[in-house]
Length: 432
Image (cartoon, rainbow, N blue to C red):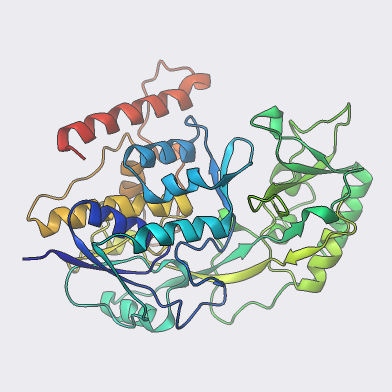
C-alpha cells in the first residue's frame, strides 16, 4: 500500500516537509494555491517565496540561529542547501537572491517523482495524513476551519516588510561598505549619522503617519517590531537596536547612529534596509528614508508594508513532534506552528516530516535531543505557558543549562559543540 501524505502550502516549511517525506519513500500531494489565488504579500507563482527579509541571519555556528542552520545541513535540509547555492554577500550572515532561491526550490520539488503538485486552495482540513504548513498568511477559510476544529481562538499580529533601495541611487560620498567589527566581507552599506542629524531625523520620524490598524487586536512579535514603533519607546532605542553604531567606525569616523543596508539580489543592484520593517505610509517612508545620510536621492523600489501573521496556540494544540493532540495523523509546522523565522520554520518541518513518516510506518515518534536547537525549539513551543503564547525565534536563552564551570565567554561555543555532538549521536542511532 502506497504511503501518502497531504502537505498544505509550498512555502519554506511545506517544501522542506515534502522533500523530507519523499526522501523516506512517502508519496506527497503538495497543495499550493498561488497560481489561482495569492495573498497580498505574495508576487511569484514559484514556491518558497521570501516575503520579508532575504536573510537567513547569522552563519556563525556559535550563534543560536547559525547553529540551527548547521543542524539543518546535517539533516540534509532542502531549504538551507538551496540557500547556500544562491547566497549573496551578507558578511557573516546567509542571505539569498529571492527569485533565484524560489525558482531553485521549485525546480527541485517539481522534479521529484514522489511529489505531486496540486494547484488549488485548501479550505478545510483534509482527511488522511496531513501536514499543514500554510504559514503566517493562512487563508481565511482554512483559518476558520482550523479554529473551529481546535475550538480555540487564533492569535493575530502583523509582520512588517523592510523597504528596498536601488543601489545606484545611494550617495557613496557619505555611505561606506563595512560589516560590524569587520566580520565577513564588509558587504553591508552603512549610512552614518552625527548626533545632530540623528536627533533631527528622530524628531521627524515620531511625527509621521502609519497605516491604520485593523479593527481586531494586533499582537506584534518583538523580532518584527516596526522601526517607528521602536522609536516611540525612546530617542535612543533605535541606537541600541538596528541603528547601533558599535563596530562600524570608518576612517576615524565614529558615527552616533548607523543605518545598514544589505544585498537583496545576486546582481547587487538592490539593497534592503536592515531592521527597518515598517507600517508607515508610503509618503512617510519616502520622507524619512531620504533624510538618512547617503539616501537623500534614494530610489525606493519596494516600500515597506504590513501583512497578517497567523499562528496557533502551540502548547495547547501540538506536542514536541509537531503532531496535533486532537488528531494523530495531523501535524502543523512552519510559522503557523508558533516558531518564528525562516530557519526555524524549516527546522520544524524536518521534525514534523520525520515523525509523520514514522507514524505512517507504525514506528514510535522521536523527539530530537533537547541539547540541540531542533529539539529544544520543538520542546519550548509545545511546553510554553498557554495563557500568553507568543512565537519564538531560536536563542540560547531556551537551551538546557551548561555545566557551571564553563566561562561566560566560552558558553556559546560550548552550546554549539554539545548540540552538534548530540545530533551526530542521534543520527547514528536512528540512521537518519
